[in-house]
Length: 561
View (cartoon, one colour):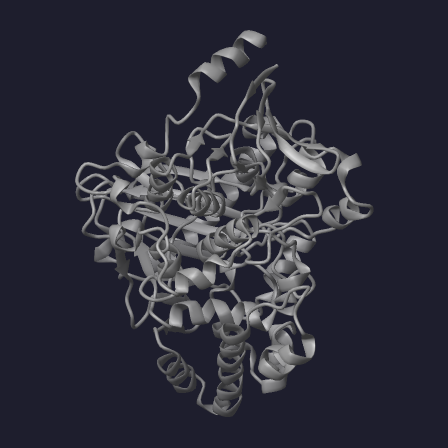
């Protein structure tokens, strides 16, 4: 057995949560090792290239809070804010909802948003004002009081956050009923709920209100150059402060001795020792696969096994032979085939495919017109997404044992081709004829997500952000096992770019026993930013996140086979 160390902390997984946690630990003097089983670091914030001509985003499509909000604060704490460029999307309509008989463009600014809602549904003005007012009040309480923890004085919290207490953990369906809203206005209000993929009947008001507020405050932005830019800069912070990110390093187990984490063992039998382990791996894989059942507190395995995963996504990536900006402004399209969005999830629950699924349409070429690298000159990329059942049977995968070989099974290929063509059909309704212009086409399914990230049920959002699995009902950053911490999208900060990066800060805070969030808000910048080298002319974010494997360790592992 090959043993290495010492490290102060090991981070399992190189998504934005893991890299953010590692960056903050490294910048605060800890010797940190990040382990990634895939050959590119970045998790769902990765980009990938085809034929050295086309570049597609896996999961980072648009974000808010880049000026003074959460993303800005997280980056500032590492000295990165001024090193990353963001391109603003159309402030008068960064999202465009397309319904069977009308469109709604979502503008930035709560007042603008409410005005457009009232203009569109004048007969529901009173209910709309009540609903949007509740959103704003809940978000205001959350900003002032935060999410309650085990040590929170509940009486004091109720007094400080009455709106959050009254509505935060109730469903948006309940709020819509209270406000007397019709199905069309409800459809608009939940038009971008695919950002978290939870049915309205289980969506906490605070979740949806926070999502909308995230974009209302400053607008929506795209990272210039693509999503890989963020992990590229975080890796630079880690390496510049004495840490290390390793790819091709699959963790086989998290080791625990006498109730205390002692490190990890990789596939290939390399053991790496450290007194701190932070797992950003899938929550079920962490507790049910990587840890010995005997080290878990009584009942924990059953609780984790019972978590309901968020609905997974299907993504189609197209390279087109024309400039899409001629047909598509700097917006995201959400094409909805119906007004009752609850019905979308009825198909998921029934383990069937929706015959007319919703589709999210986004284009890096349209969002980032001044950058090269997304597509050959005169060409464009576009990405189409929907959500669908993770059922292996529905996808034509013969058995769970055969799931690893899904990509060559005829039933799976037929199911994938059908949904790909459905999404292209929907996109052509909005963008015009596409098929004769397609130079590149591929798709990713829930099985693809599991293959590359080892996520349960192919979910990229972790456990469902629902009324019974939200806030303090989600796993905390500190576990019952000494030295074992969590980060990632299934923890209390949730999913998405903001949730993942905030969760990384929170996990680092738990390790250090400090409130880094408050320190950042006070202007703290950690680490020596003069050492940072990422960015600038000729820097390639994707290349900076590749070829990070330990070649000597791979040779040892190969020799042992």
